[in-house]
Image (spheres, rainbow, N blue to C red):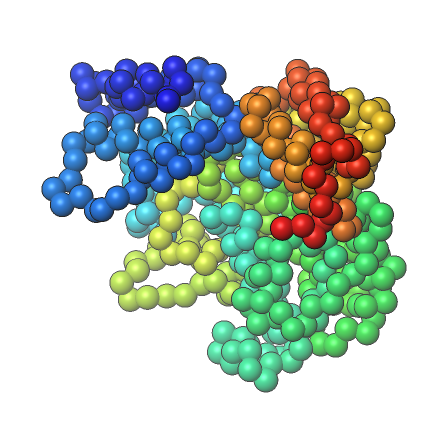
Length: 484
């Protein structure tokens, strides 16, 4: 039975027939943003019913289709736009981001070369200048926009492979990878899986060695030095600015010095942590950031752009472009701009992501971005402080940025607390595993999340923790981590 919110949608009040299609979407947008909504998906079975069935023969009216899509959405949306949404690291969407993203769809530009969209090309160039300044990167650093950090990693690591093999006298674009000189890759044990995936796609999967990490997940520079000294051929080192689970930052300056002493390339996966560089008070936690050769980050995480927006940055324009650039007779490239958007990413055709990125940077400015980052980090610290005082709740790593990593018991108890929080609508959190232990990760990434969100979430978390049975309590159904 639909709740009052769902009933209003089903009755047509949210997508009224007397408005045209675009006015109907705007009407629903206001309803969606202003009306309280559940934090957890209500009815996955209904979601399948609404979207499934046979392909229509004759089609349906626009309002019928739009209303069906909205009904399905209300049954299956995750609460990524909510101030109490702390699952994964997904951020939200700033209002200026939503509005400008509508314009991107309205204008429907193909951001491939200057001739397909002068607007997107120039906007991307301006964003490049602004971000290089915001992050404090070397003059001459270039940028490519991608679908996310995975493809940003791919673009950057392609450049790293290009440069390292070129230094060994091997041109990978012409000669391929068969019989190429070796390129050793050193990564931390907590490296995000997307980086490893990209290395495999580049033919470097068999040349990866893992560097030990300290108790807080930071790369051990002494072990890195040992491995780098014995690494054959070229060298690529992959470090992190904000680890996936606990938000730790590798010792960047020390890693950069070691990498470059061996003629290597340092790539930083800074999916969300990069944005801390916008804050004058937090930037010191990223000491050495500017010493890397390439960086990848997401706009749709901590900058709170709508999905999707990945950012690849490289201090060496030539190998970056050489790794990606190609030509085709049908593509009219222009000398007016020096390069085209497609020269710095894998994709050719792409929506004009730069326009939404530009709008947010222009609207928020450095200070506005810094306020979001600082507010989130303060909320994360406050949340950790409130929770770790409770007997039985352990903080597994210091709060470096916006990630809170907690242990509350065995896997079954962790799952029960997560399910209670998510189904109750107080907040949305996700479980993880840290050093073989069941854990809960709370990521404070939404532009609306602050001290108030932290206090409300801590209260709900403690209630769920105290109300549930302990690991060894009768009826707890604790079957151990190997249970089905």
